[in-house]
Every structure is written in structure tokens, then in C-alpha cells.
View 1 (cartoon, one colour):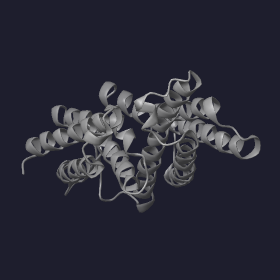
View 2 (cartoon, rainbow, N blue to C red; view 1 turned 60 degrees about the vertical axis):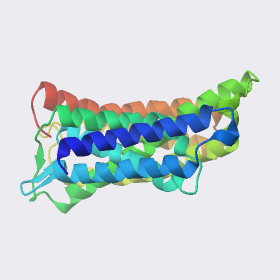
View 3 (cartoon, rainbow, N blue to C red; view 1 turned 60 degrees about the horizontal axis):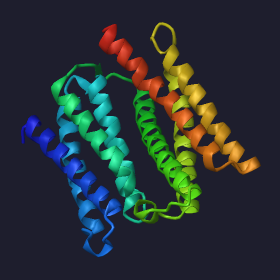
View 4 (cartoon, rainbow, N blue to C red; view 1 turned 45 degrees about the horizontal axis):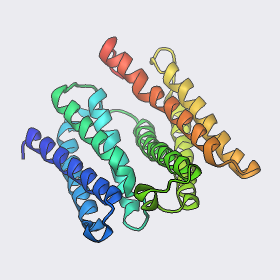
Amino acid sequence: MKQPVLALASIGLYLAASALIAYRLFMRDREALPPRALALGTAFAGLILHTWLLYQTIFSSAGLNLAFFNAMSLASWTVIGSLLVPSINKPVENLGIVLLPIAALTILLDAIYPHIGFMGDNASWILKLHVLLSMLAYSLLTLASVQAILLAVQDYYLRKRQPGGFIRSLPPLMTMEALLFEMISVGFVLLTLALVSGFAFLDNMFAQHLVHKTVLSVFAWMVFGGLLLGRKLWGWRGRKAITWTLSGFILLLFAYFGSKMVLELILHIPI
């Protein structure tokens, strides 16, 4: 199957899955809802086609093409995979309302604006491990940030004593919060390993144009670590947990994609 067809099919399935999840979430007539398995199956079908598309666009004899939009598409694939697999036995698929359209957008941008930025086959194994760990950490902390937004909406309506159909369809507040900290805990461990592996291959941070990425990543690590410590020692939760989660995610977002966008798309320096 050619890349444009794969891209369009994957985009269509992601958007259809997002619409099904939204319909299940907002529809008041609970008896007329489409089955949950249909929404998840559609999303998984999109993920499979997205996997095939990435294989064609990223892997080549010259190495891995991790140019800006390819990297965005790969990151969104990691996020969706990290969402769908736990959704089999945990009520987290509602995050797909936001994440599936974003993933569809990254596929579209990658198809419209193809770039080349190879990580050659001669790259060290520690560098490849660093990229893998970074992607996994980013995906889980992205899920945590969307979970935090959903938690904030749920908390707002419960405080206003207006638990409408949308709010009633969500898991209890304590369950939502437990899922949030579970995502953050695993993401923090992966981010720690990513930073350690990154420092292992970082010979000259300034010469490699990585100073901003490194500093912002360390700040993000400190924010997530501080949140977990505050949770353990002082029982932080609610709005404080939401604020810290979103602050850490914004730092992480600028650390990777902000610096990569400036270097590749504006300064034309591949990293």
C-alpha cells in the first residue's frame, strides 16, 4: 500500500475512533451506545496502519529518518500505543478524544512536509536506547497531562455540583487520580533512564546544540520528581497535582519538539 493511502486510512480510522469514544462519552441514552470494543478496535486498526506507515517513512538503508515531522508522528504513535494497550483492561480510552485527532494531525503534517534527518546505522547503541527511552517517557507523560486536564474538568464540575452525563460516564475521581500518578511514576522512571543514557553519549553539549534540550529536560524531571515527592510526603493531589503535571509536560514539550523545531525548521541544523 502506498504511503498517501496508508496515511489517509490511518487518519480516517483515528478520527472515527475518536468520534466513537466521544459519542459513547457524551450520549445520554446509554442503551443506544456503540460497543466499547468497536471504538478500541477502530483505534487499534489505525495504530496498525500507522505502524506500517512509520516503517516505510523512518527505516531505510541509510539509517533512521527522525526529521521533525517524522519524529512527531513517531511520538504520537508511541502515545497512542501506550494509551490503547492499557485500555484493554483500564478505563483510560477517553483520553483518545484528544490524543487520536492529534495523532491524525501529525500523520497529515508528516505526509505534507516530508524532511530527511538520518540517525545513521553507525550510531551507538546507547544513543538508540536514549531515543527509545525518551519516546516512551514522553508518551506516558503526555498521557498523564491529558489525564490531568480531564481530571481538572471533572473536579470543576463536581465542585459546582453539576455532574452531568459526561462527568458521570468517567471513573470516580479517586480512580482518575490514581491512574494519573501511575502514569507519572512510570514516566518519571523512564525519563530518569533517558537522561542517564543521554549523558552517557553527550560529549560536548554545546557543540551538539543540545544545551536547551538538556536543561529543559532536567527541569521537567525535577518538576515530576518534586510532584511525586510531594505526593508521598504531604499527600499532594487535586489542583496542585494537575498544575505540576502540566508544568512538567510543557517543559518536556519545549525540551524536545521546541528545540528540534527551531534547529531543523528555522536554522536548518539537523539533530
